[in-house]
Length: 257
Length: 250
Image 1 (cartoon, chains in turn yellow, red):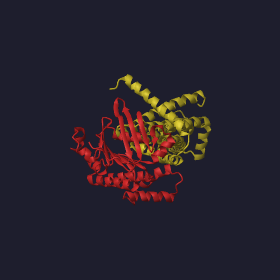
Image 2 (cartoon, chains in turn cyan, purple):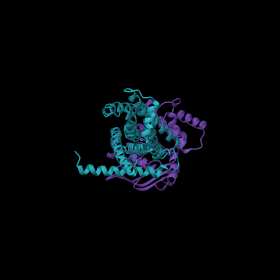
Image 3 (tube, rainbow over the protein chains, first blue to last red):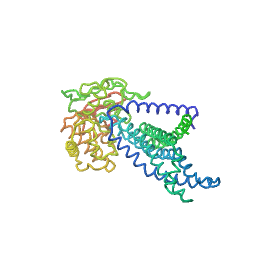
Image 4 (tube, rainbow over the protein chains, first blue to last red):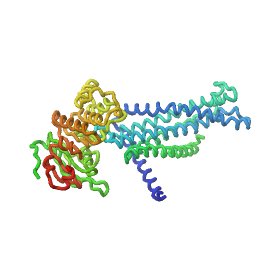
């Protein structure tokens, strides 16, 4: 087993390396030449290809949360508040975090494994000798795509989850769609949506930067590729919770509660 | 030992006192090499002796610790990124694993360096150059195939086609026949000679495959303990009584 002191030293060392990697992204990412075609391709891969998974999960979340909340609210005679209570929980917390966790698994591991494999098979070196800056072509495009696509996925999942919640509500009582949406938007305000969307940008950034860092620095052949993909998921999952905690504190300080 | 036939020609690659270490492991230690125009130089050495490090330093995939490296008379360590890219366009690099981009078709793999180095090239010109490059390596009609659908030998050929597409003047081959059966290995050796003849390229070939050395080398350099231990023609080295050289031929 590792010495705890060494483990902490490794943790801080790796955190420092990821921060430097992020610094390089900000230094190089906004200078020409820009890789627009690759950015679009990555946005398609990251955004469009994750949409079914995020959509289905959002729908199930909306449905399940509603079904499970119903008995408790019925006990207190507040089942008429069900749509508004569920929608606030879904939009503020559940959907952004669940979508980010799905993206950490799907996008984080995908980026870690793809870049790791490219690294150990010298494809990144080949790109460099072909007159391409691999950091711009591979890293900047993936980070930008994920940072832009995760909030979009969250917005779409929010919408789908609210539809799931509508079906959940109608399993126990009959509520028209018009009344349901009125009840939702009566309680759901800008201050619920803004922190949720804002933190999604940070989720996307963290997931992609960790995936890219692990993949780009893969060593030890195919074994290293597996380890990179695995660590990308583990670290980015942890990062999602840390960001969520910080976002909750900031929202509280700024009275977005 | 006889001195190799010196090409009374332009010096294309000049390496003097090159040093490269990884921690305490001194991989290259005052290594010297000169490659003349049209010459095939094979760098022979055991696994882990620093052969691949040498050619990676030459295109600055790795930064050398010290020493002089000149290609076409230009000092590689001192080049700006733009100048380095221009030089890299004149140098072809065949990686040991071929390094074809997995997510791209053969056509896209070949297009990639073209699009990067020749920004104003038209679709018709690209198609023409890709077709020619594939014809040169005997793999016409594979444009739509993915790298995963190709055999090891085909990947090497596509790798060579990707090098050729920019008409490089210097070719760097990193163990071109490793992992191939003897017949395919012979075909790759033949292809390298054909490329040299057709395009009058100068090559540095990294290998420990003696068939490859025998067939392709105009001159052989033995890399041992980070230094140029011996140099000569294949026949010179084969008849050497030095035990460090003999071990490659036994």
